[in-house]
Length: 382
Image (cartoon, rainbow, N blue to C red; front, side):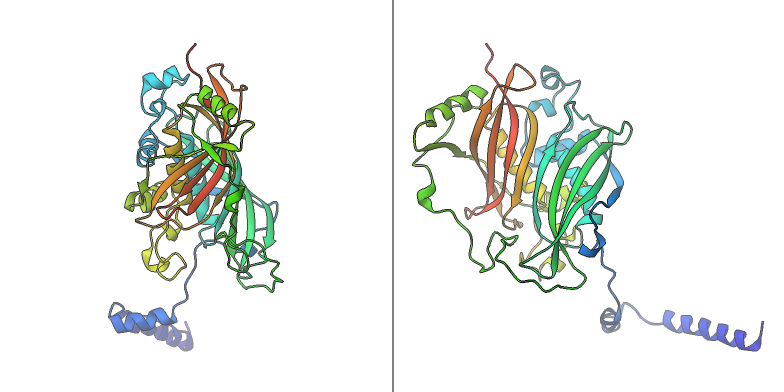
């Protein structure tokens, strides 16, 4: 070793020792360190995504009965087929299966770290579908996403818009368990110049900042509620509305106020690492001013309210899902349902198909989620 290299080595060791003697936890020292330190952000910016890219998400998740029951209990989904073996077998299941809402939330939650943890508005999801066969506890879920499209946001130059097609997969059999397409605004590394063509923003306002609303006189004169929750009740209500200025639409009595479990615990249980749901410090400086409820929790609560007033047999799929306003701790989520159409094409003769539009709203009457849903609804026994 040369004298010069020995001197350099001594200098490096001396530098390390000198830094080690700093009281890093001294408040003033730490404040200065924070000012100088570079933040290593989590998640990806818009520029990281290109059409056709496929992302294999880690680590995956084992779908347990405990996780399933925690989700369904906290979101007020009390269908006995997902809780009791006798009720499950009467429905044609071997045992209580994994609820579609928990499967959906777990599939999306696993993707957050790589797709949307950087932030940006959840603009919507569509083509959410499930297999014809049930998914049972202890299934090991792996997830992959393909970038379907990328686009510039005309109203928010600091964001781009990305759509992914995501597939939840049985890791053992490679069978698709849950598929959907979702669209998010994703922050750019650098803002871009845009013309601003009046496109609708993620908060439901136009570029002028004025909420887009439907005039009251466009609403039907009468809103009819079905008498019960069987397929025939929905059919009869639609027949009663036919030929009149009426629609089959009604609200559900239950509401669920957001607490630590719904806001933070449920997303974290699905490996959803988005700090929006548990980091109040960071969220204090954002438009919401507080942590926000995971969209799939809001959605599942609303659907739980709706299902409590119907005889659900099987879920078929969801379309045109959108999230309209922030839901924060202390907000109460209610639900409103409109029946769109019925059909007798269910997979089982004991049920018929009904297509609904569901709207979740808060204590101020503001919509926070909407989507269309197709489900098989039980018929009355002959």
